[in-house]
Image (spheres, rainbow, N blue to C red):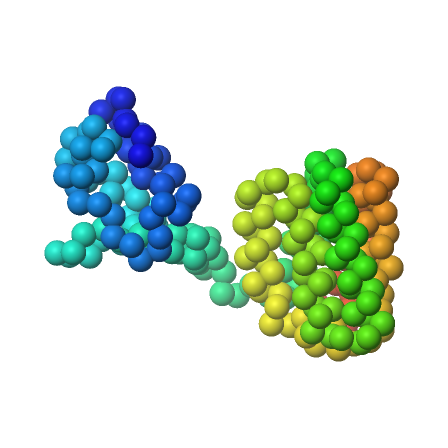
Length: 230
């Protein structure tokens, strides 16, 4: 635990405790140490600790239970719920449009930043995808398709992009099985994935953006026809 040098800065206490929660030092559901212990370890006043805990509660990192203390919240889940609050009327067409913009941005960054090991990983995912397509294994195809796209997102190294993309895929999963059961649409996915992979291998970010846009435009059109979105 880091000692706080400037005891009057509550933000420093917030950052210290939040870092320990995010690193997993305190697991979800675990009770935080008593105020006296935090004061001693951080070298700050009790008032400072209390203010920090209140701030962390507002940020969805802790839950205050009367008479019991502060407990670590599932902050990622809580923050995701907060992020999507008021968006209950989001339509599938909205998700498709946002996905197109998000993944087009991501693939350009990913091609520029991906290591050779990551490119090799993407190649293996694509090989498995082709095998699943030949074997008409729809469940595996869906899994590998999502893996292909989410791995590309992870190669950007951009935490915010990765977080938003995760929430976006949560919205897509409910309707993807119907899309993959359309064999013509599913067959069209293999070649675009291969072209995107080729861009990684050739380190061609500009072409990768174009290939991703083309791929998602076709996919979006297929989903539009299946789900009558527009």
